[in-house]
Length: 153
Image 1 (tube, helix red, strand yellow):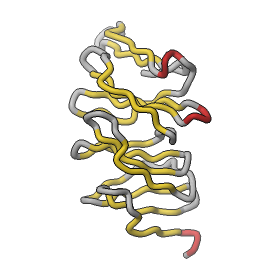
Image 2 (image 1 turned 45 degrees about the horizontal axis):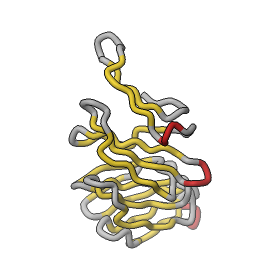
Image 3 (image 1 turned 90 degrees about the vertical axis):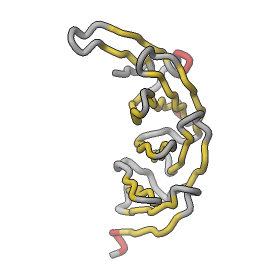
C-alpha cells in the first residue's frame, strides 16, 4: 500500500497490523506506485513532478532499501524479466534498468505518452502509445524494430 507522501506499508494479511513501513522520496510529497515484485524485492516508482522521479527496490521481508535510482522519466508501468526491469512512462519514453543495482541500460524516446501495460515476447518489448500506436523495441538496446499506427490505417 502507498500514499501521497510516498510511504510504503507492509501489512500482516491476517489482521492488518503494520509489519514495516518505509518513507520514499526523502519524505517529499509524490505519487508512489508498485511497479513490480520479483525475487523478494518490491520495485516502487515515485513521481517527482518536473524532475522525473525515483525507482526504489525494497526488500519485502523487512522493508530495507536495496537501491534507489533517480530517473528523468516517471515510471508508470513495468515488467520484469531476466534481471531487467522494462519501464514505460507517460513522459514519452521507455527504458530498461538492471535489477541488481538500478542502473539504466537504455532509454528510447517515444513520440507520445504511454499508459498501456507493457508486453514482452522473446527479445521484443511492446509498448502501446496514447495515439493508437504500438512500438516494438529490442530488449538488448532499446532500438525500435518497428512502429504501427492504427490511426494511419
